Length: 220
Image 1: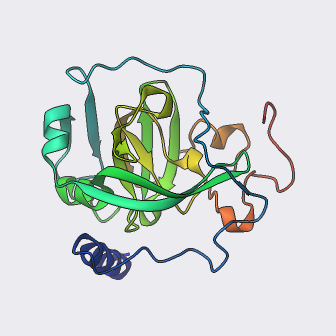
Image 2 (image 1 turned 45 degrees about the vertical axis):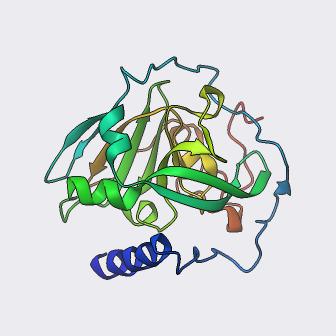
């Protein structure tokens, strides 16, 4: 984990200096079973919480040396990161070259300093949503907590004030309306993972469901 972290952070540092682009997950840019769209469809739990910036908080805790709770001003005061990546939704649409701005997950990790036993990250949202990820997936050089999309503040419809972006996984792994990041020493399944979705969510293997080919109840 240490060597992979160092290598990923070196790539991120080169990217921040304008010397590196994200390593593509596959030579085939469009994952199998996906189709390209030009718009940005809205998918959520049907709850879009109203979170005024003066009341917004992001709690970061768990298996870390320095747990913190950031308000909006403190979050925005962290080093800012802009990245362009592709976006893949499990409902079969993809969009290329979406530009996000926010705080890189590397910056979050440097701030709280995960303990050696931390191997998983659990995200919780203001709308009650949750999702689980491995720490290694979160420590990729294109993962961030985004507050802006294509130069504009992230709207409530798309998960504002801030949402998690993990481009190389299906988009449900990146929680909208983020409010809590917990570093764990064990996996903890989130909202869709306990309802039949895959826990690994790799678009290039069509890793959509826990049982291949069997959509969970209620899948659109």
